[in-house]
Image (cartoon, one colour):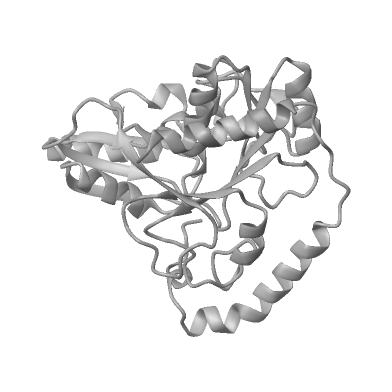
Length: 320
């Protein structure tokens, strides 16, 4: 599904659904009574408090690359949302598809070993047994079963916390204050200031910067199946790309051959390039990727020393 429009503001629909949000929050509290497991290696959790689209995977990749540059053996851990395999499974991009393991793990596995496991405890144990010295969880802030040595709360600066209500009345998985108490710092992705009150913990600003060859000035037909497709549209425009046609899809959309054929015909008719996100590209069957370009981005902190300091703190803490 795409993020509902009513999640962005206080309105009649969100108010009507608020009682269900209270119920959702109560069930989440009961789930947190589990006895957690401590992995034999440090665990860094990259989480968020909203449903999808905050930028967790780019943050996880940024810390993974940083840790690798320091010589640490890194492993990513993901639930493998949308995949059919329950795990624990080490992801092999040459063998597995997004249908089996989800799209984010395929991206993570391009940088370091990535494990998917619906049972995060078993996944962490498998990663550690395979030689990981640091486990980076992509999502998992609301998972109570695995102890996190450090948690970073990722926030999309443009969307913030939406209307501030719990699912289904709003985008929140849990109250912001509760998530903040379990987090070491917030990673604020984007240049906009939060519409709602500032977070009551240290905040590190970062932005998504293109790594692809220069798309500026080019005419494209862009498509995306992510939580907030408009975010991709806005990013392209901000980088000078001329969007002559646009097609959003639901988050984690599984593309059919007929859909890609239609997009390719539309792009050809307009004399435009067909462009999508990295997450969408890895979900495409190999035989459908021809002619489709990827607008890739990296997450870059405004001050790289802040990411360095967090990694130092985590690894020094684990060494004691």
